[in-house]
Length: 188
Image 1 (tube, rainbow, N blue to C red):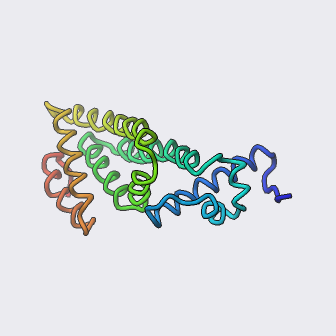
Image 2: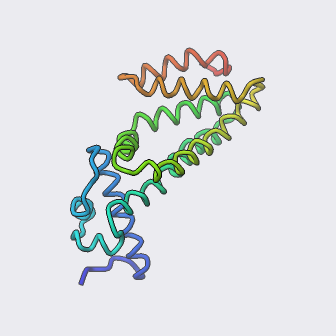
């Protein structure tokens, strides 16, 4: 019988599920291929057969991961935006947090998921992710006094997307700062 390292069976179950989801996430960051249940189990320290006690299939595991990742990513960006003091700084925080997300291993995870998960599984969480991000950006632009917050938000997102493909993330960030800094009235 496996050793239980939690105060309750429910807590142990939650820890094992978390370990499996984290293992799948790590494997996707390393390779754009659908991980096997055996590989996920090995990474989490569980036998392949034990993985099936938590997820019926790799597709179910990945769908659960998708359901967690997009809200988590959105909350990371929104937290940065909300922590900024002025509307201009909130817009810049949105830019910076998105660039950080694109520069992290999470980008590899997102790319891998697009290749290994059915589009229907991704569609809803991706749409909710974008909706969640647009509210704080548009509000910051409105508070800033931007007369066309919707259009400006689209332009800012296009700039972020373009910059995220740059081989030198620091240089791309610096260029965006030069481009947007004066508009946003950012200090230095």
